[in-house]
Length: 155
Image (cartoon, rainbow, N blue to C red; front, side):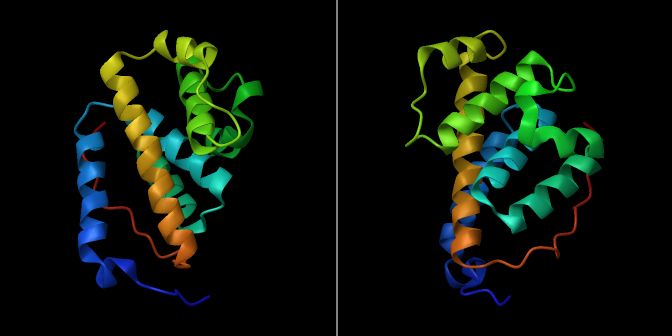
């Protein structure tokens, strides 16, 4: 597979704008485990190989298990995910598939049980960001498999 456009080089301002959004989310205090789960789930739904490669490698580097990563696609029936993680994954699916299901009060109430307003804002921002990355990488056929995990700071 050959990429259609290397948008990082072709539109560096676009690329850097998304990186600034990521930086804001990363500096928000949003739990990295939750962030990784959200990025993987949205990328599964959207079918983004590049992002799945990247975010499963990141999750593993952050200490996530292969077992839990393999169960993300069926999170709602898996006791391996706690209620906080399940509420974040449900919100991820709703926001990613917003044309099929609107963010209803029941899902939002489940989210509110585990997250503050600030955390919900940044969680939703993380979902928006990964969906943006997914769409760019899918549209421009970014080739998966070459991502190398950068040096990590402790969790």
